[in-house]
Image (cartoon, rainbow, N blue to C red; front, side):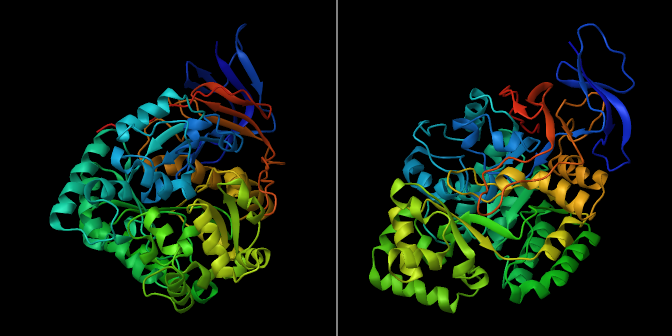
Length: 530
């Protein structure tokens, strides 16, 4: 039985002008785009007045564990996302040697969550991708090899510099994991143990990544005071290794640093003129979201979460933490400095005991607990074993638009999939671009915006048969109403699905029909072929 999307405005992901046509799908693939005669057994979807486009590709996502424990991935399907790139920020699920399982679960809980529903003994990327396949996810899933996991396997969790032998071992692990089908290397140079890696370490790892034509996806060492030096480090790594550089969730944090935006963009332009391949992704909001533990100075994280919790038990070390937060440490992105105690909000906590903290900023948390905001926050992190999420406000709408309109940009969610009150990007990043920045503010055309969600990220990842509406391509398709599409979630009430998306198809099967989920779970694990 064929499926025919009839009379919609086809915007194919190339950036070219849209046109009225029928899109015919059969056996999971797009067959033709043009005029289609309807057969007796054909399934016909009337797309009159709607836009028909490729499924959206989310290049920065944290569905790594959710795709196993809740494979319907409703927050992604309902905003039109059909493909996701996992393994972000250098700290994700694989590789994971068995001796590190307990410590690593605590380390990643604030980003990816935690569960006892799996035994965590999948060992490596091959085992993890097989586990994903066994749970039949709703979206297509690709994977990056996380730097922190590589470093952990090669040299443990101590915050020590790597030796030549350590780097050689890391390169061996990386090569093994890339051969399992990963699309490149990720790092988060503010997260432990990635932050302990120096530029030389990253260059050697990126040489291996470039050998396999993989992507280097990086949360850079600073998005605030030291963003110029941090950006130069990325350019140096890419120049020395030949790797494709993809910068995660592009931003410049803190009012005192906003004047650095043009200089930073100029550096990227000069590097591209010299032949370095550079792209970046961005979520369309003025606030970010990550683990609350990032407010702690780097030395607190050395040795992993268990050591962090031990240090939080010490009144003297707490005093040192407060001093370092107030005075700063060169090269460290100090979230409290650039956002402020009143602009950092708790979004999730693991246990029932601290659910009253969710939705409060750190000053309000201190008032609720009857103590200063620093020690109230330290107590929360200690009681929750560092598994606490946060939102931090750092930018302006003008900056969102500036990055959104850059040729290097594609859209992402960077959505943390835990409970509580997550960042609204989890539910609405892609519809927000289309509803707010295309229809309402006219910052981009429909064609340009859709390209940034489909064809552009497919090119970055090197996907050969997704990202476009084209005969022979996989049938990942979205149908939406251009007059009504919009995100609904707010920072106060984020858990709201968007409006205006009618149909989502993944690999030829309908995942969303007239706004109602079918739970087809027809996604596939995409392995890069080397």
